[in-house]
Length: 461
Image 1 (cartoon, rainbow, N blue to C red):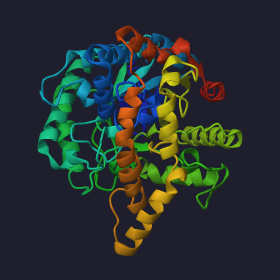
Image 2: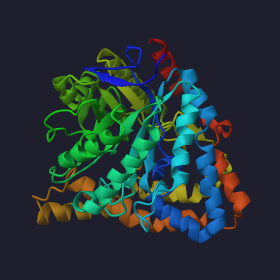
Image 3: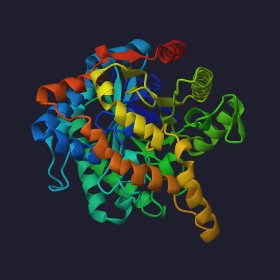
Image 4: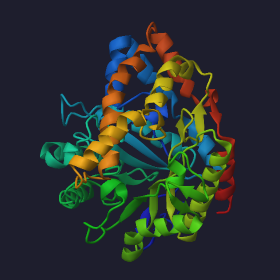
């Protein structure tokens, strides 16, 4: 078998000419730590600085090093292979590869971490897709690009764009001969508020990568968080437009599926129509379909979670009907969405329990968080804006989501970072490293109803 992946019209094929559907998970929370995945408030960089202040340099380094070592190993890849998966999307943040104080100077330590995942997956016949999830200057307005303010300055500063081009030149050179890297996902969920920069930037990036590596597939997210492809005229050669396909009943709480969610009825037909709309550009251009992210949240409400699993099965069936590859978000976390999770009685979760409780109460996490207990704060602001600024329509989703970013995910989340970090008080380097080992697979618990569903679905071929 020649594992190299290539684009052949609307299909992906390996070097032997066999059609390949890439079906697997995103490795969220590893080289891009996200607040709902690993429990901290606000952004990863804010959290790292706060933990460093509490632990000191040596113990903080021990914690993060152990976390990166244990979170994803060959044992995790073996579990995914046992489910029938053949692909892992590997998100990573730019600061693993270069420091802001030394732009364009590549850190070999970050490249070795990527090698760790690529090699673990390859050992079990699993492809990887390298996903630059957070870039200098922030390519979108939310926490998962490490954005602390809501302003995506990547699109207005050529310096940041130059650094990303350079990063991909380095990565292309490192992986150009690796057949188990299926391809490159250069920007996760970009959000260029003008829609005028992303097209020329993609053209520049494609040219730079192709000068070094003409073979690997490019997986290109659309604008507005991979939902808008209107500014792209034609697909690039050997490239795939990628869609993100989160269905509202899976991420809203409360919700019911099938049934009513936020005043709208959702069933399989509605989910199918949404998928068709989000993947229209692929079908029009005759290019492969890859759903780079999708998947419901789980709340512990038995009825709601049963509906979430039914929704997931409907989506998998729809993807099969259309020959779509997919990457389920996410593999491992603290219990919101993962296939496996740190155990509730793990040293890590027990230590950060007070911060988690306050985060839930204040609704500081965008993903899986609730504003129910702070409506008395939000409602006067919403009324004020409706009265004073009735035509205000900020990018990307309008006034109410914009207010939530500023109030819940910036104003309330930022002071929570120090409270989270104080949970680490008193730990030395050995204790901090042991805390991080709560994410080692043999110490995690499996969401068996989810893994059973995925295993059965993938056995269908």
